[in-house]
Amino acid sequence: MPTANLADFEERFAELPGTRLRVFAAGEGEPVVLVHGLGGGAANWGLIAPRLAERFRVLVPDLPGHGGSPPLPGAPALVDFADAVGALLEREGVVSATLVGHSFGGVTALRLAIRRPDAVRGVVLAAAAGISSGRRSAQVLLPLFGVIRPGRMIAPFRGMVAAAPQLRYGVFGWWGAADPPALPAAAVEGFLAPYVLHTDTLAAGRALLREDPRVDLERVRCPALVLWGARDHQVGVADAFEYARRLRAPLRVIADCGHLLIGERPDVCVQAIEEFLGGVR
Image (cartoon, rainbow, N blue to C red):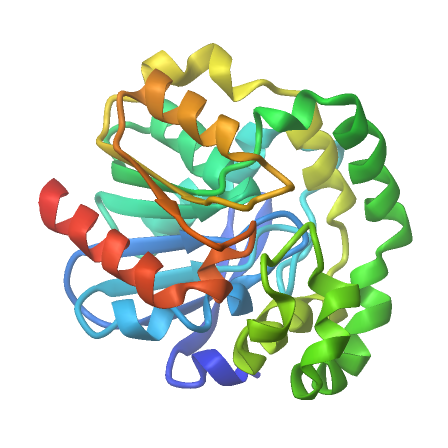
């Protein structure tokens, strides 16, 4: 069943070569694909997707191994996740779309833009992963969290976390939100619900660690926007400046906002995305 925040979206499964993706779809007009981060899911976009669907055709997939999508076979590389999104566009009859990627979804969108420039009109990087993933701490923590899967243990209690702002410190403090108690209850639900269904987020984490996106950024030809939280402790704002410089893209930094900017400041994110979409038509 669709997540509550995407209740007005059509939930369906796209049969693709080598995989199967659950996707939520709504709206009409210019296509926009929202790609979630590592350990996330379509529900992460619950405060943004419905608003964009008022003006655009919006597709929100669960990446392989996340949410309701089964994992990819073998030991997939980042390109395999990008190709899954590209195959989804073909399956949906989308010739060209703007991709909005959060964290792991950002670097996935970049990879697709390089491989399929015809299919990607523009890219919005919302706290994109990839650069800081080369740090020693990331090399240790990402595989560890992929094995332990702490989100799966917390997810059954997401209703309690959503109802009690003080509990959000333990779940989202420091790494995720600049002000955990202020995180909307609907955002808490959207960030935690996918963990109940995850089957293999470790593969995506390993794929992320194997690549440095900076190597190929000069091959991105489409317009880009870099959107970042000023208090992002997971992928710091220094990464934002480097992405913006290498892509020759504008940078918008959101004050008092952490890594989970799409849930912390959805109004600002929607405004920035809509303004960007207006410029790439």
